[in-house]
Length: 147
Ligand code: THU
Image 1 (cartoon, protein in one colour):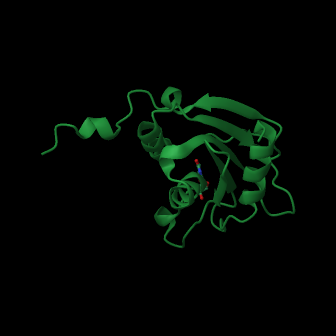
Image 2: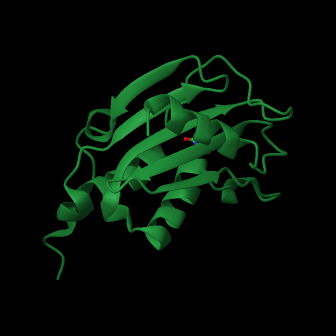
């Protein structure tokens, strides 16, 4: 799948977001090393702090579908999802919590997972690697000294 196709899937996944409180719809598409695809979108809640991000929603499905140790590439796109197509000009990069969740997948696979951070309209895209956007991250190996 091309980068553009993966971003297109993230953009359409955003249209299934439940984001009545922020009005900001985010979609995420994850591709496995074998080319399998899963998607997710943000899921907000009346108790605001319980909202779930698109990336973590997609990672949960990835775990159930092929295992997060098989994650190869991730596309994220966000913006105004009120119409028939996602809109917005600003590239959306994963929040800190989502970087931590992607880092866990990265440690399991030993892969520096590639991330396409796209704008709502899909025209802007920053190509990132998880280890670059969460330097000195706290990963599974940080727990080595546990009992
Ligand atoms: N959001 C995501 O889904 N992923 C991110 O990486 C950034 C933020 C969602 C959370 C909330 O529902 C909305 O965007 C506004 O913050």
